[in-house]
Length: 286
Image (tube, rainbow, N blue to C red; front, side, top):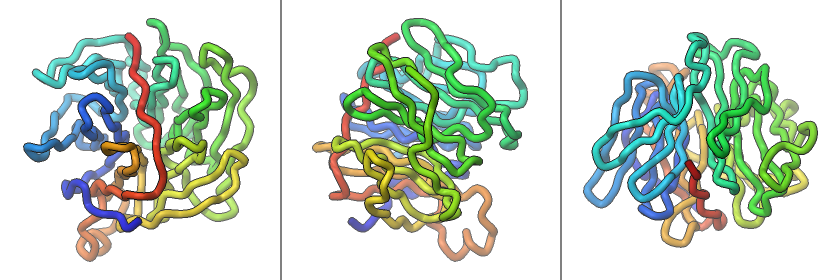
């Protein structure tokens, strides 16, 4: 289960990896550099935007739903054009989009945060059936949005709290009560970042600053940690031909020049085979 380099482009803030199950292709972002990135059989590719972009879901073979600082967008992979779906805190100059993921009902959850991680400036929303609705407010750094494969539960975190939360979902995928603590990482000094749930219900959480992704069972008990060769690990994604590969993004943001000079793999994107089996990301229904 040793991590290998999947893509050696070093991201300032690599985030939001998405395995497109129809294209059999990984997409991810460098938020700070305003890029959507990918690679296929022909090599690496990227698109640059005029604002921050951070998360995506797949709509069809040639279309992604992309979250930006100002809205949700249909993005055409064939010609690089985008069409607005809805605005997202467009009038708020303090915030940008951050972590996001499609839910099993075809909706899309997206979190925001302050450009400088201003306390409580962000929120978490759900886009569903043509409407964007705020779910949770006063979030500092939205992360870890993911869903149990049986549709029972959503997970998320405000990284600044050190706690990953869970909330029960109703039959249409809306929160059906107040969130409760799933995992409390404060005593371990760990910072939860992006997360994903495997086919068995284990939640895999990237841990910023700890050079690892760690798994926790459905009761919130630690299962195992997978070490990676970069310090700031940001988000996992399952993919590959049998959904048995874990792709992981990282960031070089916040690291000293000495660290970067001594370990140039900071910010690269990695792949680990044989950890567990994932579930294909659901299609976003627009």
